[in-house]
Length: 225
Image (cartoon, rainbow, N blue to C red; front, side):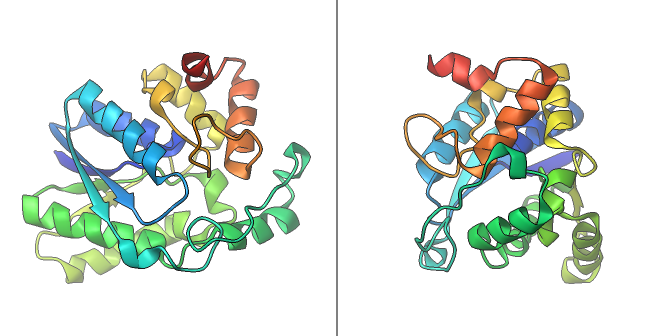
């Protein structure tokens, strides 16, 4: 089995990468530069992971995305919430809309499918998970099922999207990452791209809660000390 891994170097995609690395005969990673705030860190960390595991790495630029709406790309203020609001759907649905990048996963998976078909890889691996799916419809099992149905008629080789974390929370993902020795010290969750994670964006808060719940120190923060 050969896999294309969509590797942003986020917590989820890093653990999904290690799942694919352990199960597949060959892995090729793809990281996208679409003008996101953290693009330099994401590319740096993804490259470090690929070098550590000696797998191929492609960085694909999507410059036309850079002026799209949303706090991640087109500017605007990054939403801020408190840790106590992480499970408040009324709050998190609003923040999801603020950081939404139009059709991002549709675009990413389509590029992954093109690469998979061209290089004769069978699966496209992503880090979609249940916690993200609560507010992002393009992380849900329904979205993945629909996309895979499309691939049966939209490609000749019929690659499939594989989502090993789709039923997991962030806490589950941290546990799984530790269990399979995923390179969590090279995972970057922060929406910002500064020298260290901001610690206050929603993605940082979810990551911190997951490690706290598991009862282990975040290896990224330990490495940055």
